[in-house]
Image (cartoon, rainbow over all chains, first blue to last red; front, side, top):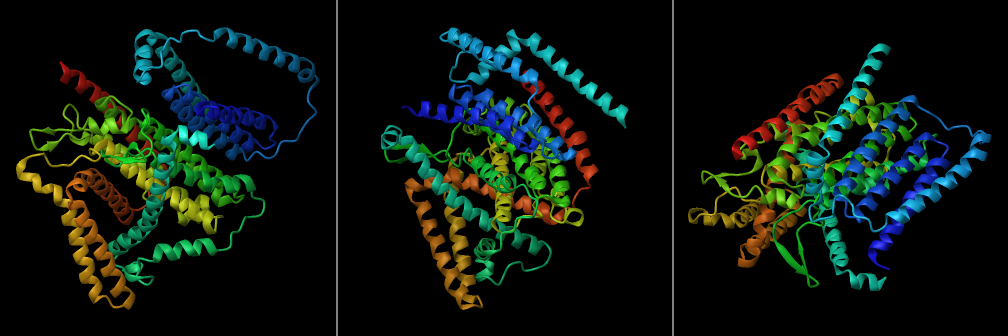
Length: 164
Length: 408
């Protein structure tokens, strides 16, 4: 087995294990920590694919910023252990088949996508290439997204002001 | 498994380098605490550690032993898993960050493998460092939460707010350097600073030609002090208000791990300031015949240090000091001779300048601690969001503008 394959299985096990633990943990902080494990494992998988920039940004944005806010809010609310309720009937009879269906669908599309060309090739400096794509060909959607985020920030500020 | 090792000799070399660096780093950490106590003591007209060994040189060892043998108390009602995880997270993340620092340009052979000084050389080195820094918040926040005590919780909340706020300014302040270097790779960033302006001023980023990164450096160093929770931004552990902040409930070696993590981050930040703004391992003197003797500067400094140690050791009041200090002096003299040898001399130039600059930044860290009083919490937030962030954004705009104009 090559080193890449070993690393892939370790990271994949980390990601799946973290995701399962995220659902099964009773305490919100433990769930949040499991989600961080998933994020870091995903970043490792991106690194294996040669997408260094995406891997670093995955950790900085998801594990380092968004999850910090999650943990922060849980700490502020001082949320305790959740009481387990019986799983709702809806989840049991509709959720399980839907989940199965989604897995099959994903497997089908991933199998079909194998061997297809990605818009950015994994060259020696993928970061520079990524920036070129982002700021030349996809500059309009990029700027649009930033305006969307700006609107969300303004909305949050307005809501917070109303509370005070 | 042996097959795996045989196929990847790079891994073996990396493991050896990691072991050596760990040993050196942990020793440096221990003596950094001694150095800090000595410097702060002299700033405050005291002697500092003086009893354990000559000049208190055995103090770090005594502290380490004390940490190991203290009773390890876990507070009742603490979340045990997270309570144990937090110090591990803090220390391992700060030590991982050091793996990305290149210490010199030289290459050497180990088991037939050409390797350089420094463990990892990533294309996204700087970005990866920031990724590790951004995870550092968890150690502090989780320690505060899991202790099941009010002062740690308040300290943890404060510090997560502080670290998230200053991370923004920290990241934005280096964008100017990235624009000038055109790379995230730390080695390439240093290489881009080679050369001299008007034949004498080094082209380090702090003096770089289209737009000197003075604002960037100011924002970077201030934000970095806040990010490492050091004075004057050590609000997470403001003892007047929060006892000891997030690590109030930690005792024994778990407390020592937070302590070591903090000092390791100090070293990382000093290395980064050197690499990004002060030319890393590049010498400040141009390569001209009149300054050729500069290559023996490491030897001269080591020899001076050695002479002082021997002189001081002979007059020292205790017998241990009379023996230890001259022996240390002789070791330094041996090093001085070693770096004067033709082959070793070239190799030592890079690490000498690099470590020298890092040492200056570590001294500034301690100096600032001994000089400035602690900020108030609202002042801290105001400095972060209303001064550092706009200033670093302005630096990006000015730098890119200067680069476009300069190119034309």
